Amino acid sequence: MFEQPQDFADESAALHALLAPLDEAALAERTAFKGWALSDIVGHLHYWNRGALLSLAEPEAFRALADRVLAHLGGGGTLRDFERAELAGLSGRALLEAWHQFAQTMAARFAAAPPSARVAWAGPDMSVRSAITARLMETWAHGQAAYDLLGVVRRNTDRIRNIAVLGANTYDWSFRIRERKPPQPKPHLRLTAPSGALWTWNDPSEADLVEGAAEEFCQVVTQVRNVADTRLTVRGAAAAAWMEIAQCFAGPPEAPPAPGTRHTGARHVSAARG
Image (cartoon, rainbow, N blue to C red):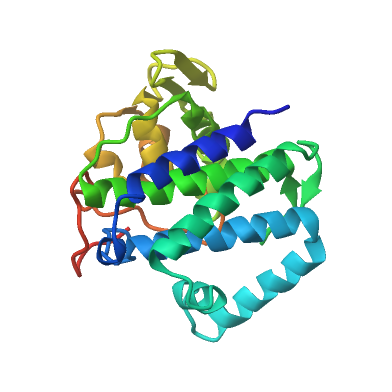
């Protein structure tokens, strides 16, 4: 038994508990994440949770789905419009409950699979463990926009270690997708977990260092906060370059949100980025 499926289920349940009291109008409110409504965020999570389970059960069917997405985007369509069409009118509270129930079912299915088995995805195949970890990261990251809009400070647990690991492991990736050579050696990473435990990566160094709360590091690598809006200690050229572009998720390079645009209480404004 590996812990990531339960961590995913718990993170999904925490986000559902935040959103469950909201009515249809509240779920239609737009967040500081690209102007997406809360319902759009739930739809995005639900659609790609379904995709992740499809990749586990029917990899060829998932590859066909991925081809449809790429064709839609290549034709000038948006991902949000594609997902809305695929969800066939499911929205608001009905969507919220469908997402919640499916996430718990999906967690159980992944927990029953061998963690090292390979599953299809939009890029290279990945392990079952990596696939469910990616869904946990997406749930946590997109959920931040909901916490921000509702003015709620999230109480994190040590399950965010999964996201910190992704962040540490995607140091090279963050540079390479921008056609830049990753500076070496990698900065020392020293994070304090929500429990108070100390998590470290890479060789010890005081000259090239990222240090601080694990939550804030996770916010930077998932691009839900600009590093300037955190209290992270960033020392050295490599560390500074990394924190300016850190990206732990797949896809083309994305720009972090502009300083000051993503915070507790943030709402959508036309000039907001991220």
